[in-house]
Length: 109
Image (cartoon, rainbow, N blue to C red; front, side, top):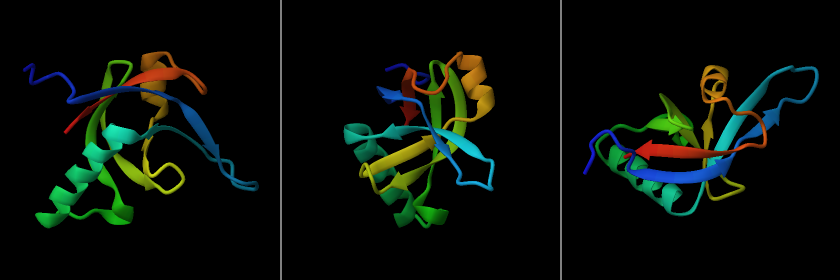
């Protein structure tokens, strides 16, 4: 097994969350669902059992979007039953992707 290859690969749509005015912020995410969400949930459970709980139920992950690797935290997402993964501007730029694009996501667990 290639140690540098992600454990999980899936495709997801890149979507934007816009803050309500007067706030001006916008954040971009992909949603982690199904088997990928189950793997992240298991990782979170394992880390909590070892005393590594994080705020808001977040899970620190090594990920890639369209082959651009970075580290971030995924957050529980009640609407999908999975997690949301923030994708910062530098990653979107380097990957050449924007809102509404389907992207390949890799997660190392």
